[in-house]
Image (cartoon, rainbow, N blue to C red; front, side, top):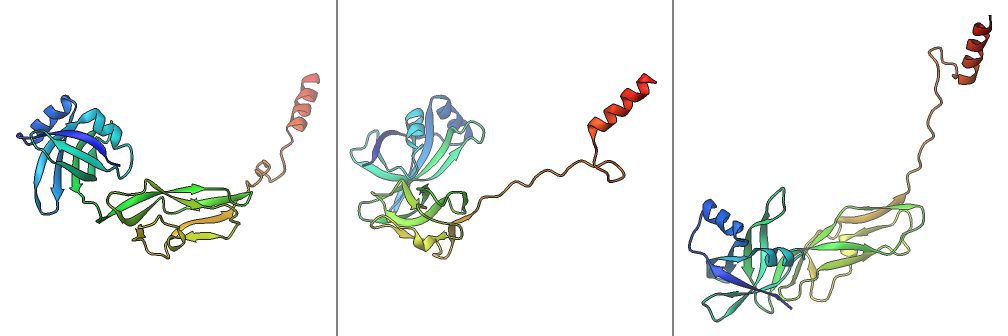
Length: 210
């Protein structure tokens, strides 16, 4: 189910116009796809920011002054590198029944052998998924895995209708032995003899008594 937003057509462009929009809690965006001309709009800033905390969120956008709404998928999201606030969004128009290429997060579930370490190489998987039914995440189970086991991209179980676009031989994760901390070496004096702090203290006491 798509989340709904109301957009306002944009008539001013450039950096100055975009800054004014953001000061008024609006986010500049462009909607394109399916052979249509790009439509430049502004979206409600806070509402859009909250929705885009989800990955691959599907949006139903109603544009003021138009009767038909648009179903779109964020394809490129520009954020302020310091604050993380939205600066600009590219939205791709999608239709029911078509598939789109997206990256879906991989979530590790379960527990591997006790005393082992799981090294995860891939945190997301590029897939071809139904535009109106994109998974938020794909689970990768490590339950019962032991040291030496590994999971490749081709081993990941995908939801129905989703096809991986990753090389099936790519490493997703492997199970390795837990590193063992090495004991710290004993301190030595300049001649290579072990230092005995108690012995040094006794000599000082003898000298004081003389």
